[in-house]
Amino acid sequence: GENVEQHPSTLSVQEGDSAVIKCTYSDSASNYFPWYKQELGKRPQLIIDIRSNVGEKKDQRIAVTLNKTAKHFSLHITETQPEDSAVYFCAASLYNDMRFGAGTRLTVKP
Amino acid sequence: DAGVTQSPTHLIKTRGQHVTLRCSPISGHKSVSWYQQVLGQGPQFIFQYYEKEERGRGNFPDRFSARQFPNYSSELNVNALLLGDSALYLCASSLGTTGYSYGYTFGSGTRLTVV
Image 1 (cartoon, rainbow over the protein chains, first blue to last red):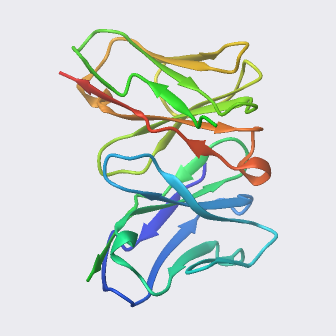
Image 2: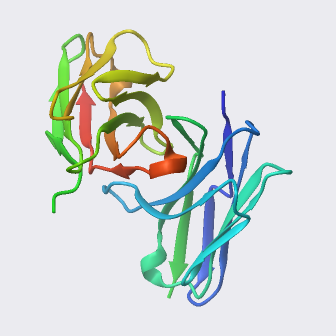
Image 3: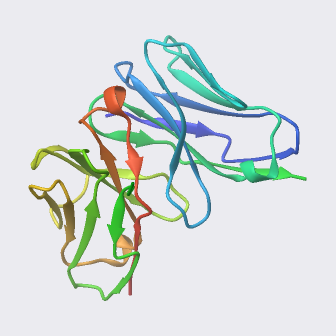
């Protein structure tokens, strides 16, 4: 089955800097790659997703890139703000189940 | 416009007991998936139901079961609770069965503590 690895497990940046989180997946057939943000005690919220027919997608300060050949995808957050502090999860799926990475705790220091 | 609703929000049970968790998907969504999130880890897939039929099952023991009702709401049942079942149980709602086509929206979860 699919296996998703996520790095780093913790990331601390200064406000205004960029943050990059990387994930690799094992099943080359996976075709859907969402990113979720989870604040303490709250539900995971979809922040951006990318499908296998696209190499890059951007939404304001957030972008995701997908390299199908290398089987990895990355989340890029620019101009980070303290409210970006949370745990971020990547996931990969083919059919009906999503396999999640272990999460990255992002801290943005003011 | 209601999102995905789960009940109860918190629950404390004793080892060996049984528990039932409930989920109502977004109106018009026919698919419900269940995930277990242990503290400090990513969610793990348990089940997906679509049109009242099981469409997928993760690597969980038979103590875990689920069903979907004609109104597309769903129940997750866990028998013979173990301490290791303590987790946040998340329900994800979707129009269809694949993330590629429809994406998923999570509910706020049920925090289950087994003592």
